Length: 253
Image 1: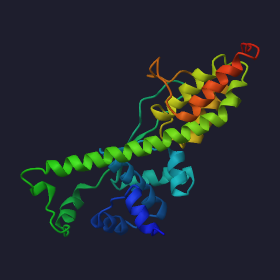
Image 2: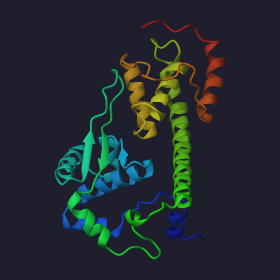
Image 3: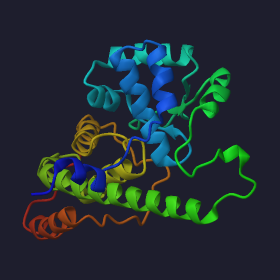
Image 4: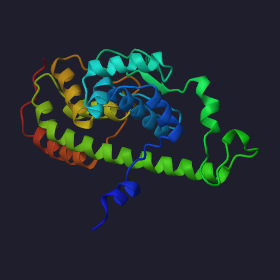
């Protein structure tokens, strides 16, 4: 049997938090929630490659096992300490939520101290290198790309399952003439739009709620000919195409 510790190391995303960073965070005497929330954004920013992330407050609260109010208080404290910068995203059309952009920071006064701590064997400071290691950078970029692709593939699979399970509910709404098109809009928003940071099933359910309340609108920026390639919903499309030929036309709301 494979050791679970080795399995996690070989297959899952890393939280690459250097010792100088952890030591500094401990000295600040952060609460457990504040520490976890900062490290969540640190890891997400590292995976994205630009130290920024767009994580919904509800998502952060779920991952940190705390309330949304606790998350908001933690943001205020981390911003005060110079560890985070939060920039409101542009307002979107009604029916689509904007998620604030969060950047992880380190105060200027700790930079030199952190650089002075011991390096790993064979590694020198990036600042002291005269020529960047292009091969290393390329390899790291390729690894990051593969991880992003794997994460996206998993999300597509989960969204397909959620769409498959909820499509029947959508198709029963009397004011929806084209449920396939509407479900594609919800899925696009969950992959590329304002719901892309939400848990898959929550993204689909949130979209369905807006559709039921008749306030859903086609997401801004969605290509007119965009196709959903997730297997589960394609199967449901094929089944629903046959079913729609045998049911009475839906009523207008």
